[in-house]
Image 1 (tube, one colour):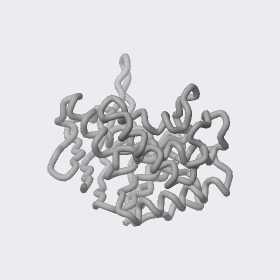
Image 2 (cartoon, rainbow, N blue to C red):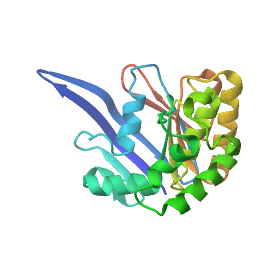
Image 3 (cartoon, rainbow, N blue to C red):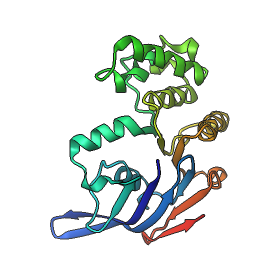
Length: 224
């Protein structure tokens, strides 16, 4: 699945004021590529990810196209189905449900749509893949930060996504846990999963085939 972004702009409008967060962002991502997005806090990195996923509307004239489908033209039901079938999300703060065990946290995205036993089998396989098969019955508060992020990665993979969208997934981790997560993501990328990876970690800025820098001026610098 190819992603093409052209003239992407995003403006927030409040009473008597306009705040342009993104201006004329352009890049493309081939199937199986890794794009690293860098920039200081407030430069629009998270907003960019939400626009790419169809979670935020974009300014007129912006184009976000997956293969031959422009998501800005999609209805909400179409966007939800597209995300469920094609995208995986990994967040800095894990976004796990504290009241559920690891296995159920991984299962949740597919539970309303597939048979429970099939989803459970897949969740267990994914937790084994991220080396957490001994943590099926643990709650998030019983896990280290690195373990929580591996659970979050397993959850993001439950729908076999073509594209993983990673919003600073190593930002809350120590160096050892960070390196474990990066090793896992690199393996997934080598297996063919496309990745968009947001970071402010200087050690990680050269990962992947492409780098997109968002500057304070909100003008992007595209390095290929």
